[in-house]
Length: 223
View 1 (cartoon, rainbow, N blue to C red):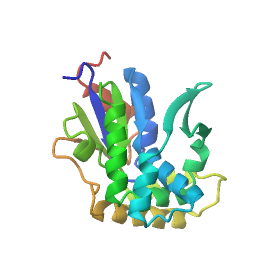
View 2: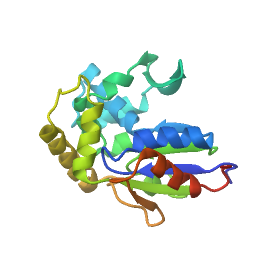
View 3: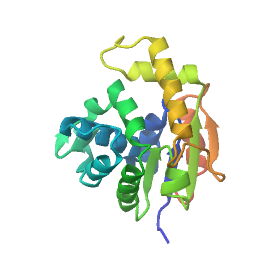
């Protein structure tokens, strides 16, 4: 029995999971684990090692050996891979598609799910991703599925790309739609809404409104 809840936020690319999970974790006094960054890190590490994204056996080895940590440095959340800050590298458009490519492989998912469960073993954690409430923590005390219209998600994603204007809106929208198909049709742990998840469409909602809605539904968290 966990003394504090595990909170899961699943949803498609660009739905706002990263921003919302940060704000929710801060407001609730919880730790945030960005599981999407873990898959991006596997893609990044594999690229640096010369491991193809379609090699499930070797990718599984990369995932098992992954030395990843989430830190707050000078008040800013950062992701460290083998002690190196790779926060910006993980947000590159190529790593977004890389995460989707490596996440279809069972050995990768098995390795990272084990790491995710260990990180959140004692509760008090907000995890965001695509299969957290359905596969990683089906017994989570609070589950959310955050969604938004594809065009809105593409616009949000475009604003995150550095340098600004590196990709046109049309290019980003195509990437978003392609990833939607990949994530929802993959063999292992496809993206879907958990039966007991709270579905939130953020198309016309502000971040404050989304976080407020989630806070109202968190068990055992003072507000």
